[in-house]
Length: 289
Image (cartoon, rainbow, N blue to C red; front, top):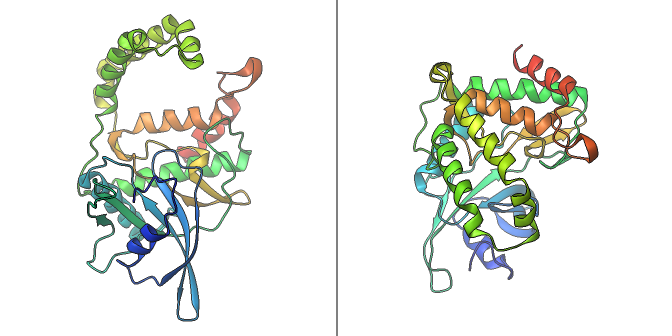
């Protein structure tokens, strides 16, 4: 049974839980916020005790080395302390993930992992968040702590995605070919109305990143998706940082710049595309403390 199924996943979840010593399934609820992986809130029972977990079915095609990288990072951060990150649970065989074999119903093997469930509020998504001054400051501090935590790790495995500078070359090539791939959708029409603008932006970015100074920029383990939707909040405090499956070793400046864009860019009306400079200052000041 596929993990992105529209059918009842109960049998699949029971099969995954059977690989762990976490009790029997009582109830579950799919996390509808995910766009890449398929995840569930899971409640189990062991004797008279009930427990809550977060169960993830990884996207199809992910490589074992990518999961090893992500999990070695999470385990390192949890052991080090300082960043509020959900602990991974180990299966009976000692692994932090379960590799489900192929079956007649699902001819492609899948990877699964079970995390502690982080209690708090999923207050934002990555689309148009407007955070408070305290939230921005706490987020900047947390990103700095994350970069610091990863600096002492020699991770297992590696990400399959190219480095950001190599990825820009691929993006430029794909953009140049995109008109021939148009399906005539409303999105395509909007995109091609701005084709030259996007093309110039790509060219300007590539030119700027070919400056000699770029070669000297620090490379660390970056999150690659640090946005308000990946923070669990309790009041103004951050009680959870999630979604490390895009993490990799790359330019620290990219991680910071992407976070500033996520946290501080306006999306609405005549302010669409504008950077809220006061918010950016709050975030960056906290990051650099």
